[in-house]
Image (tube, rainbow, N blue to C red; front, side, top):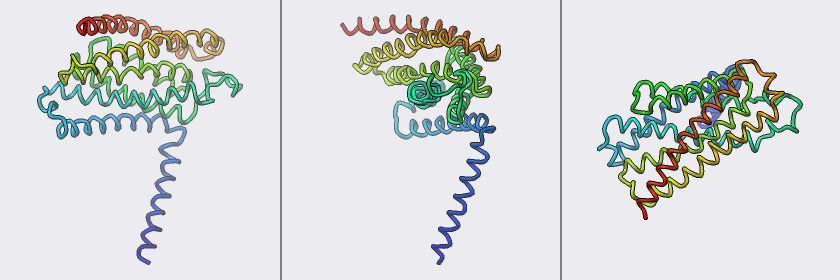
Length: 274
């Protein structure tokens, strides 16, 4: 009887918890705010967990300076965010029917769902947390180019989340985050003294290919898509139109500049191997 009572009590709490999540935390009107808070909380949790793992399982971690340990933890956050948002972006753009031309009569620039808004909110939480860290430790975690990149990304993603406009193009741009794990792995390999290893060379080649596909070719495809659906883009608010046109263009220019540096770095690495 005691066990039966405990099970019933547990189920009662479970039902209340599920009801609270559905009616409040995941209510359509609250999703933007709860997802942003969840994203910030997730960043803090990953930072602390990475610090704990680094201290107890990586000997090299204890030999780092304070700033190196902070960057180690910070890159773990950006890596997990990149995996999450890239997966969601690929699903939304290429697998989901939400933005398909044949699935709805609604303008493609005004389509959204609870899931698409939630994922953008988590990303806003990450960009907000990371932006604050970049400013707080400036310029140790990145120079002015990182400030510009994060500021534009934060504003564009936040607008798309809150207004539910242009979410398709926001997700197209966010696919570029697929290059982040490779960039971070390169830093980890360098910090571990593996700059002359095969893994470092392979990493450089993978970054080159991923950058070319996700940050050059995909942006060209996005601009072409905007061109084809420009009549729908014009239906957006003026602010939304500016973000759809200007933010990807600025990021595309930055991607080209960084890509030239990647090519130079890869050439030097391959030259040293010969």
